[in-house]
Length: 135
Ligand code: SF4
Ligand code: SF4
Image 1: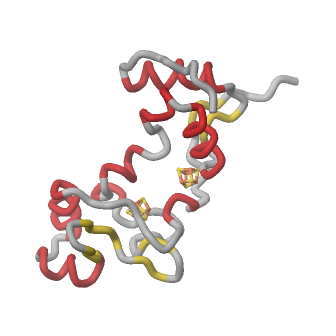
Image 2 (image 1 turned 90 degrees about the vertical axis):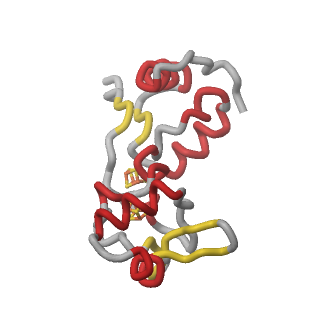
């Protein structure tokens, strides 16, 4: 029997929230997070974020993002890069990116090959479907 095709269905494995670094936050991300937490900027920076030169990331605890606890605890206030994951536009132009992201996200492109997945992603992002280059 053919495997069911699933474009993306989060498995809530938490892999994308684990590691010793996190995505970086832009100013709008910081503003959204501050509003979501309802705490002063200074407190949010000190308790939850870390800044290295111009790069702001979330702190990590025990090898995962400080906001991870069997799921994202700040979901509406999470950074845009978290919201975008794993549907990254670079997949459309780089097969190697597709393989790398698929390899770290078990919810992505199940039962779909690269070209078919790119067709779906391009439609979602309203971009041309390249899907031709293979890594
Ligand atoms: S790695 Fe993929 S499947 Fe796992 S929690 Fe993150 S988005 Fe969901
Ligand atoms: S903000 Fe939420 S989605 Fe982003 S890494 Fe932290 S726990 Fe995961």
